[in-house]
Amino acid sequence: MKPPALTSASSTALGDAFIRAFHTEHEREPVFSDVVARHLLTDAEWEGFVAGVLRSVSNYDESLAGPEADRIRFWLYSLSAAAPHVLFRSRYTEDRLRDYVAAGFRQYVCLGAGFDTFAARRLDWAWETRTVEFDLPATQALKIERMRGFGAASVDYVPIDLASDDLGDGLRAGGLRPDAPVFLNWCGVSYYLSREHIAAVLAAVRDYFHSTVVIVMDYWNERYMTRSAQDRATRSMFDSVERNNERFVTGLRTTELSELATHLGYRVAEDLGCAEIAERITAPVVAELVVRPIGRVARLEIG
Image 1 (cartoon, rainbow, N blue to C red):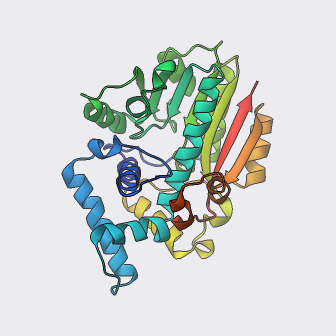
Image 2 (image 1 turned 180 degrees about the vertical axis):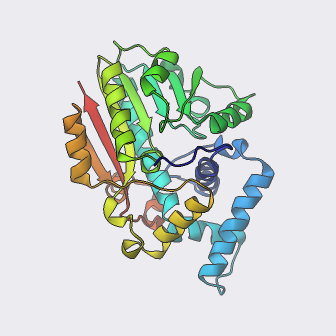
Image 3 (image 1 turned 45 degrees about the vertical axis):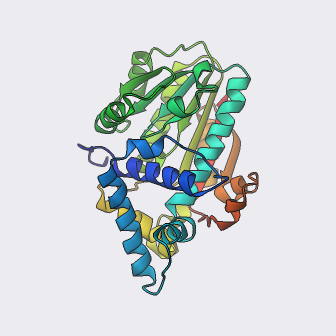
């Protein structure tokens, strides 16, 4: 059974923007810098996230005190399963994108873009790519509305539900060249889909493009999908997502993803836990970001 379609913008996408924005505003050397994300949230939304985090801090330990920003920082860095994962996957993905753009890639697909701000934030090199964003219609419509007025590299938008729509049709609607290399950012999506839909997305990309394909995707380690295997932070993340009608559906074993990718003609160039990504980053704040083993990031390639 597929999860119910969202009729309003994804609260998880807004939450990810809050994480990136808060981290950027409060670190001299952020793991991932996003100076645009704050402007995509209304003041009411920002205050709502702040209030929610502060309630979580109080529920965790009523004795915790200090400046508001310090308590939020403590929660996001030490007690949240989501925030460190969002920051490390974002850093890894954009570092790899830059590598491939430098190597000549000129097509960038953001599959499940949410409130990604690449085209408005990296104007120093985003202009070198043609960016096409795919997302659920309600989330994408709000993103487009809030991006108005920002100077940004060219972006084309294609509304799509990967649990029901044909991705091949979407890729054609986006005007992507099948004969040119493509980099796909597919983060923040796979765990909302069934195994069948994950395989269908990978197959559709493989069938559409006839040149080099690079996909960076994140996924949940299946071992930590059951409550008995989860720590408090991971259980809290699952509960929060379910309250927002965005239930996690699927986790994968590392060997399972490798077998699926190989079966569909991909090779797994890298498959990393966030702790391994952290080892590549020299920012002082890295040591404060507590990663949980549920999250992994894989880079799949064809060609």
